[in-house]
Length: 110
Image 1 (cartoon, helix red, strand yellow):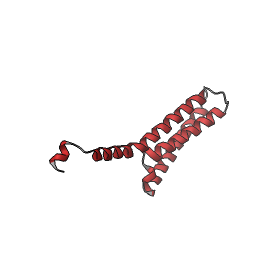
Image 2 (cartoon, one colour):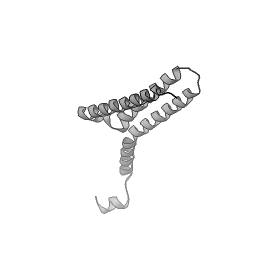
Image 3 (tube, helix red, strand yellow):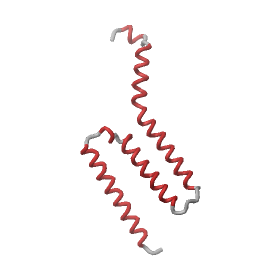
Image 4 (spheres, one colour):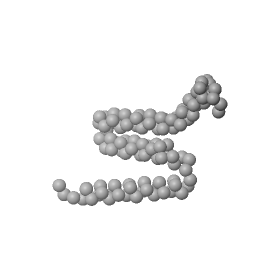
């Protein structure tokens, strides 16, 4: 770059910088908006009397949140098959631990 370009940035450089910033923040911004929307849906569903449907709906919303987080924020959309396999195995073992903990909780007398 020449000295003149550093002293007064052109309009083209500003536009390029704005496009780069938009490309950088577009994915996480959409993911954040989706997570906020899912949070609002979960909050609203907590006050709607659906009986056993509340649990099913909350778990479905949580599953969609996990998919949004893993796809966009963890970068699994553009990763290799091995990374996806490891992420899936981690999710499997984490869910197994939660299931076993919940079974232990339910089997104890109060």
